[in-house]
Each structure stands twice: as structure tokens, then as C-alpha cells.
Image 1 (cartoon, one colour):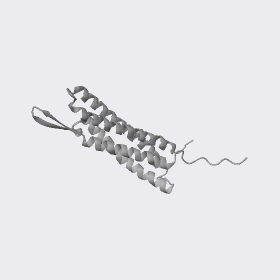
Image 2: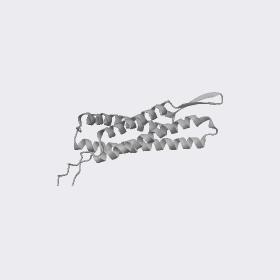
Image 3: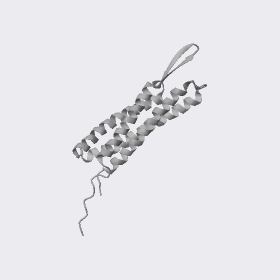
Image 4: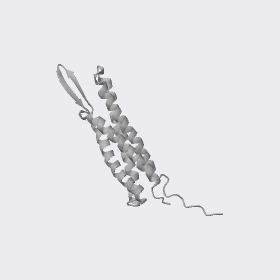
Length: 169
């Protein structure tokens, strides 16, 4: 009987992790652009009032979670590119733990940012007297949806990074 081949070093190929991180980055970038540029002008008693996403704490939280998520994802994308090109992992066991816990934290942070934005949008929809804010609120929902999709990709990265954790008996 022939000896069994050694088990694979990783379950998920490194380029798959890289693709998932790039998709996360794209979703977060589009979400940031949509949220940051979302404005609405309304007229009250012949005075124009300009409403921006930054006027609401929940949308600010969405923006901050997206920006922090993008920074982390850019760092991890650089590490993933290094792994794909060289086939070696930087930092050994310490970086595996950083990947795992960082992916967990960022994915949950993105989920809470999207949830806060969805909640704020729903509250504003109930408060509006007419449909004058509909475009603003629908755009906010679109940005939160992109952040939520980014969360799903970040959660997938978290699962992939758990496969790379050192096995301890």
C-alpha cells in the first residue's frame, strides 16, 4: 500500500482569499462614496435647507466603520498579495491570530455600521411627512446594503482565516 500524501497546508487557496478581500474593498469603497456624497435640499418657509449624511450620527457611524474596514482590508490585501506571489506567510503564528481576530472584529463592526444606517433610514422614513426625502433615504439604504455585502465578504475572510490557525493539541 502506497503512503498517503501529506495533508494540504491550507484548505482555501490564497488567491481565493485575495479575491474575497478585493470584493470586500470594492463594496466598502462604493458604500463610502455613496454615503459621503448623499445630500438632499429641501425648502422650508422659502429657505433652502441642505441635508447631508454627515448630519446624522448613524450615517457617521456607517462612514467610520467603512473607513476603518477599508484600512484593515487594504492591509490584509497587501498581506494576501504577498502570500499569493511568494507562497510564504509573513509573521507566522502571530499574524494568523491577527488575521483571525481582526477579521472577526472588522466583520462585526461593518455589520453594526450597516444596521445603524438601516435603523436610521427606517426612523426617518416614518417621520417624513411627504416623499420629499425618498431619494435621500433610498440612497442611504443602498450604501448600507453595500456595507452589508462587504460584511458578508469580510465574514467569509474570517472563516478562511480560521482555517489557517495553528493546530494545537
